Length: 314
Image 1 (cartoon, one colour):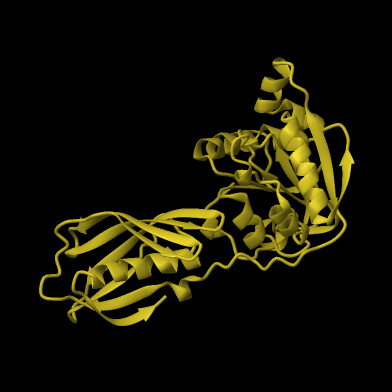
Image 2 (cartoon, rainbow, N blue to C red):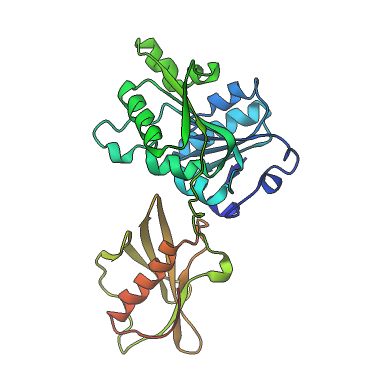
């Protein structure tokens, strides 16, 4: 089953996500590729499964594999791992996290998943004795991850043979055919760091603003606009005329922490002469602080072109 990010609660629970099997352990895989790892591994170990991936093509391939295998207590989603684990998974809820053959980022170490901040955040989402199973063909990344885990001080390291299912994934078979070694370690949590949940707002907190148009409200020429707010950035990429109501729709790109989204922000004239600015529900965006800032950015953009703000909620 595929979940949109907005289908989750923040945080969520096994009872909500797996109502028929809440008593089973809860396992999460980061970067499930075409889904074959869990199809293989589920034959040897019963668990509720949550898979996260950033490739839409992989999402569809994996869904078909899991459906063909009859795995009903499996949820897939397209999202980055950090906001999913930090936001959706409650404290000490996961029994295990799998990371199989991640991108080693040899020239950009800062992009690697298995670093101290991830180990710290994951520690608070794992049960006592829960584990992260890491399998890779890249020895340098393997040693890097070992050192990062040691720096965190939160895990015991157990180097051993990988599970057989990890050796049957697409990348495992590719690297083994080329003669590459495969490395595996299990990081068993022994301490916890309290990392607050990733903040996602509900529809009740939907950001919006109300403006009054100036003498010339038309947006005749558009240039990409960038707005920075600390560690968050909003880029207004384009604007389109809404033929239904004489309003506009802005395409906004949002970068915040480990999450990137593109959303639509509607600018709609109202009967009382005011103009409403709010996010569109298209694409079911997560209502994060960055989305609120996107509405603020569009509001600022319109202010710079003669609109007057009468109310804001963001």
